[in-house]
Image 1 (cartoon, rainbow, N blue to C red):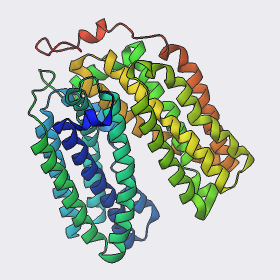
Image 2 (image 1 turned 180 degrees about the vertical axis):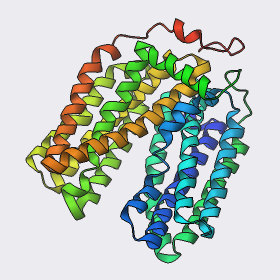
Image 3 (image 1 turned 90 degrees about the vertical axis):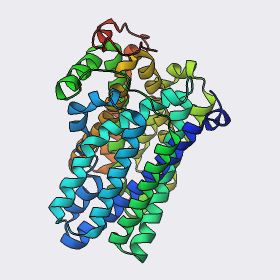
Image 4 (image 1 turned 30 degrees about the horizontal axis):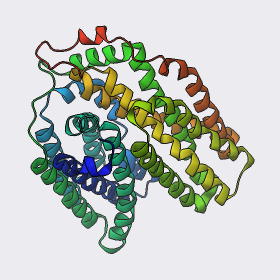
Length: 403
């Protein structure tokens, strides 16, 4: 599958796309509304920030404890059921009966399981679109970016007109729509792997994945360069002040353009060749910030750089190809949660540098570090597909063979 017409001809992919779009829009409205609600109640910027991003922070914990379940659940029932649970949570938050600490604890608890849901959702693309994973993944990436923009715009309007609690109710409706569309649109599929899941199985799977040199190189290449550049993006407000929105919009536009162009026009067989060039592109334009460019030049640099995020498509394609099917959901969940975690690490590290050097220099340092990591991993990424004999030993004997 190499065209949008082909992937959208699949009824299941249409359902996956629509459900994901509704879910992302609902979660975005929820994050914004909950942050506003907490700030109104407490006046604390820190607690407001935790309400906004708190659901992302625990994903590393989920990756370490729950990811074995990603290959041991029925995707249709799990994804629909999880969205329904999230919708009910938004309803509970909208009632205002929970204290602030209860709200924060609730969304962080859900963040742990979000690492698992990300792995399940990513892995099912392979089943729904045989041979079309890259374009399908790129298309969902585009929908995520677009729905986040729409969600923030809609959420801001809802907050101004209805208030945060009613905005949370709207978020609940959107997420419930995702649950319904997913349940009605996807076919029932058996789990990829058999056997018991849990913390021990997750640790075994993660050790097997990260212990393989080829897979380890792919994961590190997906986590580190991107995380460092997200650290540079975290400096937009200190760097540009009131004009930071210009940089954020340019970054979102560049990322969407990269997913559209690379996902649609670069054949899957050639994606490997573009990983290093795109990750290099991701960092090089940020070197300009050492010269303190104005908003127009800065936005152009950010747009070009963000196109480089499309290098992740090649890394995800490689990960799908070299991972046994019985560990595919866990591998993709580990990739997703690792990227989230290293984005937080990159933002914290770059912010620490900025405390000493200023935002512009910190952005340059982050770009140089990203380039260094890309160069160090280049030979390992280009080494080709590694043997996976050790990984196969971890596959359940009743699991289907690796594709």
